[in-house]
Amino acid sequence: MEPIKVRIPEVFAPLMKEKIRNKFFYGGRAGGKSYAFADSLLLLGRERKLFIACLREIQESIKDSVYKLLCDRINFYGMNDYKITAGGIRNKVTGTRFVFKGLRDQDSRKIKSLEGVDIAWIEEAQAISKASWEILEPTIRKDGSEIWISMNREQEDDPLWLLVGAVPDEQTLVRRVNYTDNPFCPEEIKRQAEKCRQSSPEDYEHIWLGAPLRQGNTKLIAAADVRRAFAGDAGQEAGPLVIGLDVARFGDDKTVFCFRRGRCCLRFESFSHQDVVETANRATFFIKEHRPRRLFIDSGGVGAGVYDILKDRGLAGVVRAVNFGEKAIYDARYANRRAEMWDNVRQWLNGSLPVRLPEDYDLLGELCGVNKKYDRRGRLQLEEKSELKKRVGRSPDMADALALTFAEPVREDSASGPGDRGEPCLEELFGQADGKNEKW
Figure (tube, rainbow, N blue to C red):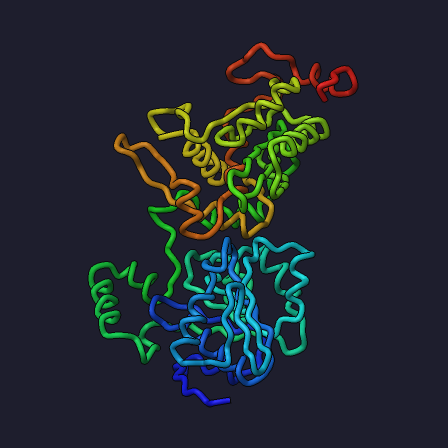
């Protein structure tokens, strides 16, 4: 095979020269991470047969992956031994092959296809969830297999940073690489970086030096408050059981139920790819099994269909429809119900009495990831779900479900609570549920 001269910056030498399980490279813009990873993998794939998986959290099509970058590098170097197809890349001499997958689409059965992987490259690792890592990490099990991680840190609590980068073990190499370490960085890029440094030092730290965004005026909920709740001793569970139901609106979002009793958030139940009837059936089961005082459901989009089914089943005394975009109860303070409910969560976390949350770092990332702002009247509002998903690659489904449990005050001694609608009390509903109401 004809040798090809490829110049890879010395800072990335461990990619090809060191045998170590996890190779974690992070930093700011123009550090050359993606180019170095692509070039190194292509060179290694010319030396011996490898099975290489290029992974990211969400991949709706191969166009969302590093496929194009690898194709561009193959063409740039004239690596004619590689065959490019619409679905992958293969070396005609060594048999090396590249596959491209989104981790959120994998489950315990699908992920088995990666068991023979020699090198897994996780791209844009700042968006990788704790759940995805816990499925992937034990699956890459072949002797001598490696996991390469490249990321520009987004938040202080990026899950993969906390799980791998922050406390590296003896099988993990962590290296920070910035544009100052890239000998091929164009002068124009250096000029842009210097301009940013002079005009906005904080932005410069994040964009160009790879520092995470600092939690400040843009964040509604602080990480310290959430972590305190992870270890919180809220005492004995007390108060009425309230369930929040955030219904998935898009294919990769999740339908999430949150169970909260007073100062204790008990647990979350998440489901993927459910239609409105399946979600309504699940809600019906939880109501019958746990007898909550309230179930608040996001009635925007497809959630309205779930609410209609539950209402038709005679559950209007328990279920309340909440539209995130509707007028807030305290309209002078909040732009909409979603901002109001989220601020109730913030106050709950900041209260004088301890509260408890399940220790879940995906939840932490969701609660602390949403930006706040103010409208023309000075009322609090939050960035939209779609904005957050575009920015960090995931939707705050658990956090929204928790917020829904704060939609209205719920009294222990009344089935109706605020806005009494003259509906049957819970005891009557649950009596019917035990065999007298065919709608169950």
